[in-house]
Structure formats: structure tokens, C-alpha cells
Length: 288
Image (tube, rainbow, N blue to C red; front, side):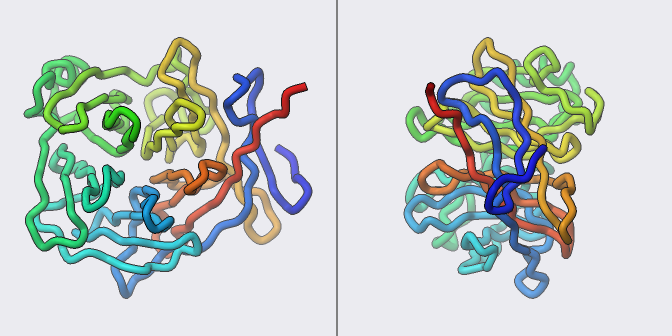
């Protein structure tokens, strides 16, 4: 850990691939808690590429919220019937937002500007669900989906099971089939000194098209992982921030998104009245 010029701080690992970031540079944070609007438990984050703003959800509220980079609510949807315990959000295209419900174990398709009932896609009812049941050891109650992301180039949808076990599901763009289920094991690089293997979770996802991999937040691990889905293990970036002049670990990281040009990561926390939106620049080593 070190302080950089301009007041940034970073944590990084090495060696590193040429296109992958070397370090995250902390650039500040803003409050996102809004009790009046009922944004009290932020639990996901996704860039809306058309507006440059971000969608988020609160797991105690049946609404979508659109916030700007300063954490201010600029719009919110009507109540979405049957949406319970919203944990993640991803933008699939104009008028099509996906929301992950942990309690129902489903992905919902939502048009934020329509009063129509969201379309529900239960994970355990998709084709290929046997892969998921096997990974859960035949115990469907162990399903606890938390993270959601989309690869715009292929339409693939990624869902993370939080822990017990930690899993990455790959779904078709049409949300009717589970293509693969991958355990997020220690051997694949999912390790943090802040949490043992049993407690380490995955709480949020975003696909990074520029770098060809997934960013995964861990609430209990107090970190981000970057994973290219291949043979190379994931790399950990500890999440740190400055508060009252002190370097602290980011607690309760629940969602992650890239900004419009892919140069910065934004991490949202679910921490009651202390919930915040943190911004980190991604710095890549220069070729010699």
C-alpha cells in the first residue's frame, strides 16, 4: 500500500499480464444512502451506457434506482411486482435490465419505463439446471445468487453464487439455459487474508470487455478479484479507502461497475447510512 501523487492509494499484485491493470488508485467516495427514497441497502451496480449513469437496487425495496457518479438519485422505477431481495443488476440493452433475486433464485427481465410485470427466469428451472444441482450437492437451499454481469459481445450472462459453495454460472443470453457452472476455488485464486475459505464470498460482478475478464467483489474478503476465466488464477486487489485521513478497508462491498470508457471501477457498499460509492482508477504498467 502507498500514497500516490494526488492523494490516491493503491494495492496491487505481480506478475501481471500486459493488458491487465497493475493497481487500483483510489480517487474518492460519495454517500449513496437515501432514506426518503428508500435506497437504504444498495446491493448492485451497473452502468447505463446510454446515459452514463448507473442502475442500482436495494434488497429491501422492489424498485430500480438510477444514480449519477456523485451518488445522487436521478430516477427510480415504479414498484416491480414479485421482485424480492434484489441483489444485483445488469443492463442487457435499451429497455431491458436484468435484476437478480436471491430469495427467489431467479433472474428478472425488467423494462424500467414500463408498468408491465417483470419476466422471471428461475435458475433451477432452466435447461442445464442439473449442473447447478450437482454443484450444490443436491441441496437447492444452498443456492444464494448475489452477482450478475453480461458480456455484451456474446450476450452471455454470468451469475455468482455467494458461497457455500462459491460458483460462477454462465447462462445463455435468452436466460433459458445454464451453459456451465464453475467452482470459484482457492486453486483458481479466490483467496483473501480477510476471510478463510469458508467465509470468503462473491457479492458482485462486472464484465470487463477491454481486459477480457470479470471483476468480482468480495464483501467478506474486502477485495476485488480479476479473473480471465482461463487457466491463470484470479488476482486479488485489496479494497482500501481514505476516511478522516486514515487508510481503511472497504467493508460490505456489494456491487461493482466500470465507467463508460473502462478506465475506472466504481464499488458500491451496503452499510446502512454509511453506504458509499467508491471510485478507483485502473492503472496499467507501461511497456518498456
